[in-house]
Length: 249
Picture (cartoon, rainbow, N blue to C red):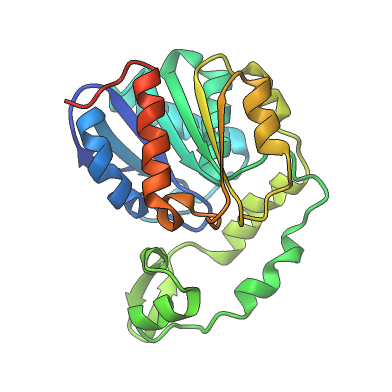
């Protein structure tokens, strides 16, 4: 486990990143979360500085998150997940309710059966290898946060995660329906959907309904809502924290 302590005290808040990303990409969000508690992010296996390489089943990632909460004494934690991290938040809330007080899930759906990693391999194949500089990365992806996915080596900037590992992780998502996780959740839940994220329509709204949670659609945002519409995202999360009796100090 590779954890990043963002600061704060009291209520544990665990941040789970998406595929290809890493814990440090939560830095901006963590700044306004700190008054609400002790904010910690973890690098998922195969990502960032986490040296663990597989196995890649969703349950393995969920167990890692559970161990982080227990080892770092964060529980019962507020768990905030983006994309892949949102899936892991569902799994954690479903299987270890003793460790989870509430969850925030951003732009992920429980059922992607029929989709294949082959559908988006072309996207990775189109990348320059390596990138020449951080500005090259920003220009290619059109975003600031993408730089944190990469590291500088002798010949240029390379993705920290291994592409084949990413394919193996995402491959499972096209074969499984994670609705069982959703149906087992009993804690408060906020579901945030990106209007331009490309997720299968209607599933996130249905997740909120089935789980008795709160649903928010952010029409103007792409997949990373907390970067594309930061004030909207912040307002929704802070209102949710207040609703579960967590106030800034």
